[in-house]
Length: 283
Image (cartoon, rainbow, N blue to C red; front, top):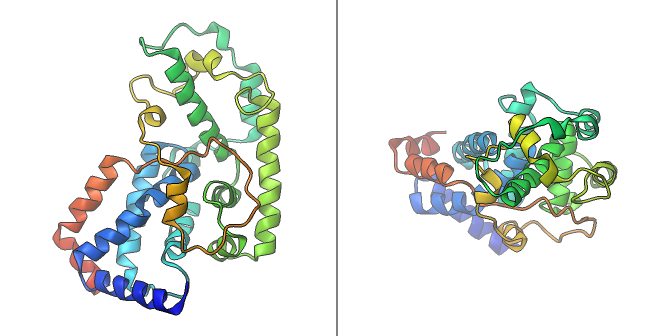
Protein backbone atom coordinates (compact mmCIF):
# COMPACT_ATOMS: atom_id res chain seq x y z
CA UNK A 1 0.00 0.00 0.00
CA UNK A 2 1.47 3.38 -0.97
CA UNK A 3 1.87 6.21 1.49
CA UNK A 4 -1.11 8.19 0.19
CA UNK A 5 -3.46 5.22 0.59
CA UNK A 6 -2.07 4.54 4.05
CA UNK A 7 -2.79 8.11 5.07
CA UNK A 8 -6.32 7.94 3.62
CA UNK A 9 -7.06 4.69 5.44
CA UNK A 10 -5.66 6.01 8.72
CA UNK A 11 -7.80 9.13 8.40
CA UNK A 12 -10.86 6.96 7.80
CA UNK A 13 -10.06 4.79 10.84
CA UNK A 14 -9.49 7.93 12.91
CA UNK A 15 -12.97 9.15 11.93
CA UNK A 16 -14.48 5.84 13.01
CA UNK A 17 -12.54 5.93 16.29
CA UNK A 18 -13.81 9.46 16.93
CA UNK A 19 -17.38 8.19 16.73
CA UNK A 20 -18.30 8.63 13.06
CA UNK A 21 -20.94 5.92 12.77
CA UNK A 22 -20.93 5.86 8.97
CA UNK A 23 -17.17 5.36 8.81
CA UNK A 24 -17.35 2.60 11.41
CA UNK A 25 -20.21 0.89 9.62
CA UNK A 26 -18.22 0.94 6.37
CA UNK A 27 -15.23 -0.69 8.07
CA UNK A 28 -17.40 -3.41 9.62
CA UNK A 29 -19.30 -4.11 6.40
CA UNK A 30 -16.02 -4.48 4.56
CA UNK A 31 -14.72 -7.27 6.79
CA UNK A 32 -17.71 -9.05 8.36
CA UNK A 33 -18.08 -11.70 5.65
CA UNK A 34 -14.35 -12.37 5.76
CA UNK A 35 -14.49 -12.79 9.55
CA UNK A 36 -17.55 -15.04 9.36
CA UNK A 37 -16.00 -17.35 6.77
CA UNK A 38 -12.77 -17.67 8.73
CA UNK A 39 -14.82 -18.44 11.86
CA UNK A 40 -16.98 -21.00 10.05
CA UNK A 41 -13.98 -22.97 8.79
CA UNK A 42 -12.15 -22.71 12.08
CA UNK A 43 -15.07 -23.74 14.30
CA UNK A 44 -17.11 -26.05 12.09
CA UNK A 45 -20.72 -24.91 12.64
CA UNK A 46 -22.79 -21.90 11.65
CA UNK A 47 -23.99 -21.27 15.21
CA UNK A 48 -20.47 -21.17 16.65
CA UNK A 49 -19.23 -19.06 13.71
CA UNK A 50 -21.99 -16.49 14.29
CA UNK A 51 -21.10 -16.15 17.96
CA UNK A 52 -17.38 -15.86 17.26
CA UNK A 53 -17.94 -13.33 14.46
CA UNK A 54 -19.81 -11.05 16.82
CA UNK A 55 -17.03 -11.37 19.42
CA UNK A 56 -14.33 -10.61 16.84
CA UNK A 57 -16.11 -7.61 15.32
CA UNK A 58 -16.72 -6.15 18.76
CA UNK A 59 -13.06 -6.73 19.62
CA UNK A 60 -12.10 -4.99 16.37
CA UNK A 61 -14.34 -2.04 17.23
CA UNK A 62 -13.04 -1.64 20.76
CA UNK A 63 -9.39 -1.90 19.66
CA UNK A 64 -9.75 0.35 16.63
CA UNK A 65 -7.69 3.12 18.20
CA UNK A 66 -4.69 0.76 18.28
CA UNK A 67 -4.59 0.47 14.47
CA UNK A 68 -1.61 2.45 13.22
CA UNK A 69 -1.38 1.43 9.57
CA UNK A 70 1.79 -0.64 9.91
CA UNK A 71 -0.04 -3.35 7.93
CA UNK A 72 -3.19 -3.25 5.82
CA UNK A 73 -6.49 -2.97 7.69
CA UNK A 74 -7.58 -6.43 6.55
CA UNK A 75 -4.29 -7.94 7.75
CA UNK A 76 -4.86 -6.30 11.12
CA UNK A 77 -8.41 -7.73 11.30
CA UNK A 78 -7.19 -11.19 10.23
CA UNK A 79 -4.65 -11.07 13.06
CA UNK A 80 -7.33 -10.24 15.63
CA UNK A 81 -9.62 -12.93 14.25
CA UNK A 82 -6.95 -15.65 14.00
CA UNK A 83 -5.71 -15.03 17.56
CA UNK A 84 -9.26 -15.04 18.89
CA UNK A 85 -10.21 -18.24 17.07
CA UNK A 86 -7.05 -20.16 17.95
CA UNK A 87 -7.91 -19.64 21.61
CA UNK A 88 -11.67 -20.11 21.26
CA UNK A 89 -12.93 -22.80 23.63
CA UNK A 90 -16.71 -22.40 23.47
CA UNK A 91 -17.37 -24.21 20.19
CA UNK A 92 -18.76 -27.72 19.89
CA UNK A 93 -15.56 -29.33 18.61
CA UNK A 94 -13.52 -27.98 21.50
CA UNK A 95 -15.69 -30.21 23.69
CA UNK A 96 -15.81 -33.11 21.20
CA UNK A 97 -12.49 -33.09 19.29
CA UNK A 98 -12.14 -35.06 16.05
CA UNK A 99 -9.26 -36.89 14.38
CA UNK A 100 -8.66 -38.24 10.88
CA UNK A 101 -8.50 -41.74 12.38
CA UNK A 102 -11.95 -41.37 13.97
CA UNK A 103 -13.44 -39.86 10.82
CA UNK A 104 -11.97 -42.55 8.59
CA UNK A 105 -13.18 -45.34 10.88
CA UNK A 106 -16.70 -43.90 10.87
CA UNK A 107 -16.70 -43.81 7.06
CA UNK A 108 -15.47 -47.40 6.84
CA UNK A 109 -17.57 -48.93 9.62
CA UNK A 110 -20.66 -46.75 10.16
CA UNK A 111 -23.76 -48.95 9.79
CA UNK A 112 -25.51 -46.75 7.25
CA UNK A 113 -27.74 -49.54 5.96
CA UNK A 114 -29.46 -50.00 9.35
CA UNK A 115 -30.96 -46.50 9.53
CA UNK A 116 -34.61 -45.80 8.58
CA UNK A 117 -35.74 -42.91 6.37
CA UNK A 118 -35.36 -39.71 8.41
CA UNK A 119 -35.47 -37.17 5.59
CA UNK A 120 -38.79 -35.58 6.67
CA UNK A 121 -39.88 -35.24 3.03
CA UNK A 122 -36.88 -33.05 2.17
CA UNK A 123 -35.36 -33.99 -1.20
CA UNK A 124 -32.45 -36.34 -0.75
CA UNK A 125 -30.31 -34.41 -3.27
CA UNK A 126 -30.65 -31.28 -1.12
CA UNK A 127 -29.74 -33.20 2.03
CA UNK A 128 -26.79 -34.79 0.25
CA UNK A 129 -25.46 -31.35 -0.71
CA UNK A 130 -25.94 -30.15 2.86
CA UNK A 131 -24.02 -33.19 4.11
CA UNK A 132 -21.22 -32.68 1.59
CA UNK A 133 -20.67 -29.07 2.67
CA UNK A 134 -21.00 -29.91 6.36
CA UNK A 135 -18.79 -33.00 6.20
CA UNK A 136 -15.89 -31.36 4.41
CA UNK A 137 -16.07 -28.35 6.73
CA UNK A 138 -16.18 -30.55 9.83
CA UNK A 139 -13.24 -32.51 8.41
CA UNK A 140 -11.12 -29.41 9.03
CA UNK A 141 -11.70 -30.00 12.73
CA UNK A 142 -9.41 -33.03 12.47
CA UNK A 143 -6.51 -30.57 12.18
CA UNK A 144 -5.08 -28.84 15.23
CA UNK A 145 -6.08 -25.17 15.52
CA UNK A 146 -2.89 -23.69 14.09
CA UNK A 147 -2.78 -26.14 11.16
CA UNK A 148 -6.43 -25.41 10.47
CA UNK A 149 -5.75 -21.68 10.40
CA UNK A 150 -2.77 -22.16 8.07
CA UNK A 151 -4.86 -24.26 5.68
CA UNK A 152 -7.79 -21.81 5.64
CA UNK A 153 -5.64 -18.71 5.13
CA UNK A 154 -3.71 -20.38 2.32
CA UNK A 155 -6.47 -22.33 0.60
CA UNK A 156 -9.64 -20.33 1.05
CA UNK A 157 -8.28 -16.80 1.32
CA UNK A 158 -5.15 -17.48 -0.76
CA UNK A 159 -3.01 -15.15 1.31
CA UNK A 160 0.53 -14.35 0.32
CA UNK A 161 2.95 -16.26 2.56
CA UNK A 162 4.41 -13.00 3.88
CA UNK A 163 1.01 -11.78 5.01
CA UNK A 164 -0.06 -15.15 6.44
CA UNK A 165 3.28 -15.46 8.22
CA UNK A 166 2.78 -12.03 9.77
CA UNK A 167 -0.71 -12.98 10.96
CA UNK A 168 0.46 -16.29 12.45
CA UNK A 169 3.81 -14.96 13.70
CA UNK A 170 5.99 -17.31 11.67
CA UNK A 171 8.40 -16.86 8.78
CA UNK A 172 7.03 -17.05 5.23
CA UNK A 173 9.21 -20.11 4.64
CA UNK A 174 7.84 -21.93 7.71
CA UNK A 175 4.30 -21.02 6.67
CA UNK A 176 4.79 -22.36 3.12
CA UNK A 177 6.28 -25.61 4.39
CA UNK A 178 3.47 -26.14 6.90
CA UNK A 179 0.82 -25.30 4.31
CA UNK A 180 2.25 -27.79 1.82
CA UNK A 181 2.25 -30.60 4.39
CA UNK A 182 -1.28 -29.82 5.59
CA UNK A 183 -2.67 -29.65 2.04
CA UNK A 184 -1.16 -33.05 1.32
CA UNK A 185 -2.67 -34.49 4.48
CA UNK A 186 -6.12 -33.16 3.57
CA UNK A 187 -5.83 -34.27 -0.05
CA UNK A 188 -4.69 -37.76 0.98
CA UNK A 189 -7.68 -38.16 3.30
CA UNK A 190 -10.14 -36.96 0.67
CA UNK A 191 -8.54 -39.19 -1.94
CA UNK A 192 -8.72 -42.26 0.28
CA UNK A 193 -12.23 -41.88 1.70
CA UNK A 194 -14.33 -39.32 -0.15
CA UNK A 195 -16.30 -40.29 -3.26
CA UNK A 196 -17.24 -36.66 -3.92
CA UNK A 197 -13.75 -35.12 -4.05
CA UNK A 198 -11.60 -38.24 -4.27
CA UNK A 199 -11.75 -41.91 -5.20
CA UNK A 200 -13.12 -43.19 -1.88
CA UNK A 201 -16.33 -45.12 -1.45
CA UNK A 202 -18.09 -42.61 0.81
CA UNK A 203 -21.11 -41.13 -1.01
CA UNK A 204 -23.09 -38.36 0.63
CA UNK A 205 -26.45 -39.48 -0.75
CA UNK A 206 -25.99 -42.95 0.75
CA UNK A 207 -25.16 -41.51 4.18
CA UNK A 208 -27.91 -38.91 4.53
CA UNK A 209 -30.07 -40.85 7.01
CA UNK A 210 -27.03 -41.94 9.02
CA UNK A 211 -25.95 -38.29 9.23
CA UNK A 212 -29.41 -37.20 10.39
CA UNK A 213 -29.47 -39.94 13.02
CA UNK A 214 -26.09 -38.76 14.35
CA UNK A 215 -27.16 -35.07 14.37
CA UNK A 216 -24.67 -34.08 11.69
CA UNK A 217 -27.38 -32.51 9.57
CA UNK A 218 -30.92 -31.44 10.37
CA UNK A 219 -33.59 -31.52 7.63
CA UNK A 220 -35.43 -28.68 9.36
CA UNK A 221 -32.31 -26.47 9.53
CA UNK A 222 -30.21 -26.55 6.37
CA UNK A 223 -27.41 -24.09 7.09
CA UNK A 224 -25.28 -24.57 3.98
CA UNK A 225 -27.90 -25.01 1.27
CA UNK A 226 -29.91 -22.01 2.51
CA UNK A 227 -26.90 -19.73 3.07
CA UNK A 228 -26.22 -17.04 0.47
CA UNK A 229 -23.05 -17.99 -1.36
CA UNK A 230 -20.72 -15.23 -2.53
CA UNK A 231 -18.13 -15.45 -5.24
CA UNK A 232 -14.49 -16.18 -4.56
CA UNK A 233 -13.68 -12.97 -6.44
CA UNK A 234 -15.76 -10.99 -3.95
CA UNK A 235 -13.70 -12.42 -1.13
CA UNK A 236 -10.54 -11.54 -3.01
CA UNK A 237 -11.78 -7.99 -3.49
CA UNK A 238 -12.38 -7.70 0.25
CA UNK A 239 -8.71 -8.22 0.95
CA UNK A 240 -7.29 -6.48 -2.14
CA UNK A 241 -4.88 -4.54 0.06
CA UNK A 242 -3.11 -7.79 0.97
CA UNK A 243 -0.20 -7.59 -1.48
CA UNK A 244 0.19 -10.04 -4.39
CA UNK A 245 -1.34 -13.51 -4.09
CA UNK A 246 1.16 -16.38 -4.32
CA UNK A 247 0.75 -19.38 -6.64
CA UNK A 248 0.57 -22.12 -4.00
CA UNK A 249 -3.21 -22.46 -4.00
CA UNK A 250 -4.76 -25.85 -4.63
CA UNK A 251 -8.42 -26.15 -5.57
CA UNK A 252 -10.29 -27.44 -2.53
CA UNK A 253 -13.67 -26.48 -3.95
CA UNK A 254 -15.61 -27.17 -0.76
CA UNK A 255 -14.20 -23.95 0.71
CA UNK A 256 -17.12 -21.88 -0.54
CA UNK A 257 -17.57 -18.42 0.97
CA UNK A 258 -20.93 -17.31 2.36
CA UNK A 259 -22.49 -14.04 3.43
CA UNK A 260 -22.57 -13.58 7.18
CA UNK A 261 -26.05 -14.43 8.54
CA UNK A 262 -28.68 -11.73 8.88
CA UNK A 263 -28.76 -12.25 12.65
CA UNK A 264 -25.13 -11.21 12.91
CA UNK A 265 -25.72 -8.14 10.74
CA UNK A 266 -28.71 -7.13 12.86
CA UNK A 267 -26.80 -7.48 16.13
CA UNK A 268 -23.93 -5.36 14.81
CA UNK A 269 -26.42 -2.77 13.55
CA UNK A 270 -28.08 -2.67 16.97
CA UNK A 271 -24.69 -2.09 18.54
CA UNK A 272 -23.94 0.75 16.14
CA UNK A 273 -27.23 2.39 17.04
CA UNK A 274 -26.74 1.99 20.79
CA UNK A 275 -25.03 4.18 23.33
CA UNK A 276 -22.31 1.52 23.62
CA UNK A 277 -20.68 3.15 20.62
CA UNK A 278 -19.08 5.57 23.06
CA UNK A 279 -16.74 2.80 24.28
CA UNK A 280 -14.73 3.21 21.08
CA UNK A 281 -13.84 6.76 22.00
CA UNK A 282 -13.05 5.75 25.58
CA UNK A 283 -11.06 2.56 24.83
